[in-house]
Length: 55
Image: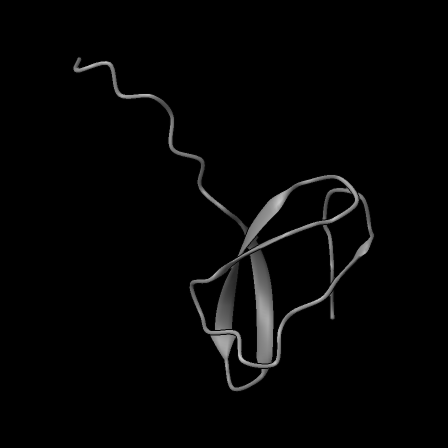
């Protein structure tokens, strides 16, 4: 389990999760990237990729 930095809700992290995976808060919808490993992860805000209009 980890805590959402946006709304303080608990985010469940799967037992087989790997660093770099994205988890989403079920309460507010914020997305986070798992950082770390060995069963102990930190959450960092996931980068959102905007539209590329060819510019």
